[in-house]
Image 1: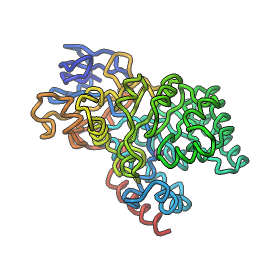
Image 2: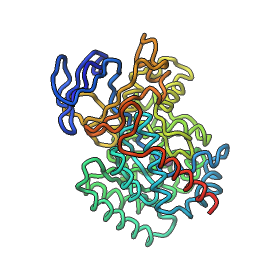
Image 3: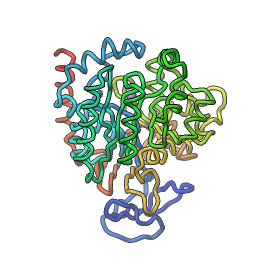
Image 4: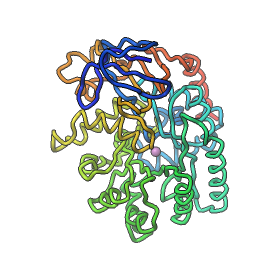
Length: 415
Ligand code: NI
């Protein structure tokens, strides 16, 4: 495949050709020749966006419960519905989420939810790239949690030869998993070279309660227990002191920042600019569509950048925001994605520069962060395969999926 004559973001924006052989970018240059040519002369060629924290099947609960705090949201709305989830609900929730993500330029995601086999099924059909976490929670029942961990290991084993799918451990949070259980999970993760995907420092109440119960704030506690390592992907980290950020940096913990969800559940604003300054790898996520309520990373990039500018307009540049949504996502999830560069996997999106939101072009990256919406995403390539062309999905039947997902969503809340 040859993506011809597009504006390519390398060290700067320039007109380039991008050659792809199989799944990989083999050359970025000028006057390249090849077959399967895609004319990108009116397009910006960007790495696909990476959604590093979501619960994709929760797309079925989009708009189901707004305007309540986290604890009430979970206890009164989300958990009761989740008790009645079926694998088929999750399958259609995953497909609906996949349609939305592909159409808004996301090529890779990191999921944590019930029936992870259904996420795998959807990913195989959609052609997306994903890291699927096996969800783990103890809830004071170590025996059951032990069985879950064994099931998780089996799940990972069955997927070890998949090329576009990786797996990770998904212990829900330090409030639903004991320190001993977390260490056991981390031990397996180290042996298998897998990520550990966990919610951390999401609400202020939670941090305070944990600190009271364990006589140390969670990040300090997890450090002293030996849990924090560079394979830990911590979603949220809204409330963290300077000292706690230093601890995360020391251990190479990746932060999965979900600004919309944090605001919507009144959890606050994560100090992303400080994290970046300290050299922490921050990547972007939407969280589930029940607490966002979209899976659109353009919206998330814009919100993230604006929130960091509360007191300092120079706190985050457009270029830094794009890096967080692409390259840092690749770093956090340990895929060689997020750059248009020789040797990187060919997860690429073409943005139509003729779209009104991309016009004029005083600063194209500024347009991407502050003005673009998903309608500007014209073509999506994942692992060297065209998944969407002229905004038409090639792997999924959008109309059928929307219809089936709507049926399952109504059924789920009325069951
Ligand atoms: Ni979450």
